[in-house]
Amino acid sequence: MVVEKQRLFSRIRSSKVGSWLYLALTFVSYALLSAGFYKIYGSFASFTQQTHIALVFNLAWCLILTAIAWLLPPVLKKIFMLLSIAAYNLMVVASGIMLNMFNRFFSFEDFAFAGDGAAFLDLSYLNIRKLTLLLVAVCLILMIFAVLIAPEKGRRKSKRDFILAGVMFILGLGLALTTKNVFLKSDNVVIWDGAYSPSEIYETFSDKKQSMLVSGIYEYAFRDLYMTLGIFQHADPDDIRFIDNYVESRDQHEKNEMSGIFEGKNLILIQLEAIDTWELCPEHMPKLYAIKQESMVFENHYTPAYITAGTFNTEFMANTGLFPAETGTSTSVYTRNDYSYSIANLFSKADYSSNSFHGSEGNIYNRGSIHQALGYEKYHAGSDMKMSDYMLDTQLMNGYENMTAPDKFFDFIITISGHGPYNDKTASYLRHGEAAEAIAKRTEYNYVHAVSHAMETDEFIGLLMDRLYRDGLLDDTVLVFYADHYNYYMLDDKLNCEIKGVENYNMLAHTDFFIYSSDVEPCSVSKVTSSVDILPTLANLFGLDTDYRMYMGSDAFSEDGGYVFFTDGAWFDGETYRAASSAGDEYQRSIDEDIALRRQVCQAILKNYYYRVSAKG
Image 1 (cartoon, helix red, strand yellow):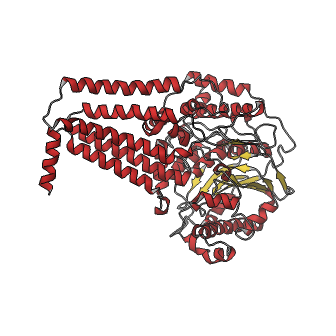
Image 2 (cartoon, one colour):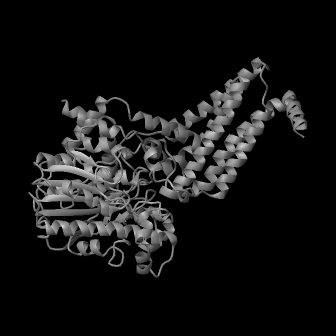
Image 3 (cartoon, helix red, strand yellow):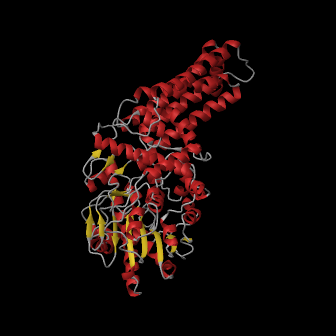
């Protein structure tokens, strides 16, 4: 049987039909993969203008890839054919998984955090459509067959082969360049128009869903890699002048009725891992809920995720008042900048000690180095605090003495018990019976475990508050609580939407943010805030000396800001939810322009290490 198959492949290879059939199958394999991917996931686009653009890009790259295979010698040809289809197949599978987990497609920027995220990887996350797996299998089989009938070593190409392959390559390249320069022509102005055009998406390349569906998988891979590596370029003088002009054009922050009300007090800033609004209730988190009832509550707070690493995404914004690098970068870029305007540095300049605490080790998200760059004296990892189980937030109390030893202290604490996956973790079962009893109305597997994890975090908050009270520190300490992201570890966004009473996935980003101080009457702030507004708001409340023009967020008590934007271009101001593809009036266009400008400025700041360059003069 094997011999007969070998003879069949040999006859096909030696025939005239065979010399063309392997090229046809190669082209079909590439084309089917790109077309099938678009068919399966194309509905995730919020507009339809980009369809023809992606199709032309896909055609162009299929021609280019097939021409390369044609031109290569036999051995390299087969290696290229198999490796290329395998690589793109992996990209399709990864994108399907990422879409399920994070509502976005794969990006090369994800490699920056892949090692850190792998520590929390669980098979329950690897959920992908069966149709996608079938597509990948068919394309791989077609390419394997093409490899089997491709010309053997020793067969020389004719002059005609080189000419035709060259024509195919040039045609593909010409199509790609024409598509980019005609269909995606950009006027290079800083504005997002009401239609959120394909040229805007391609130019910024920050919204991974729309970018993929504008470009097709092949152009997306090429441009995404280019954009990711481009972050390492040297400072551009034009970018520096652009940032300088932006900063100078902004109005200085004016004091308001809330300025300096916490001046001289200690601060404990607590980032709550995956604690969603529905978890923070008297049944599930009674201790934190009671604190919230006595707090200044920002009722319209949102935590949009601009990069896959959701915790680090919000952590960076809360500490710097900047958006993370949306085009992708290694975490090392965050250690190279100068963050004179970070919250840790502001408190340090005011003669506070500044320390950070988290159960994970310092190599996760490179926090050991990044927190030092952000101005913290020390990052206290789980091993430093002698935590026997880093997933149990109650063991953060082991670091209490280091949190409160100095006369004036600022602590940044990141909880971890709310982190997924929920199976095989102590926090899932330690309070499982208590959680199941509290949520007798619901029996969804992840729902019960999510509450179990939240209860562990709640217990830590209760222990911390009790200890501060016993030590006579509570009246002199402000505690700020905010979530890093909504609870996507539920792995069911439809269920999340049902629980939270929202209709689109962007609004799932509505999370908690509140400030407790024993001498402040409970109150509610209705103005829309987001993660990037936390720092300037706290700077105002504590009367810290800083230049608010350097932040992309705004003091919640100033007249600036008041809206949150999402990666797909949509935004919300508390009354109006403006989708990326909707037409807008003058007011809406003005917000579009403001958001786009801040977004572009922030990326330029990170790309050019602006604070470090400015510090050198």
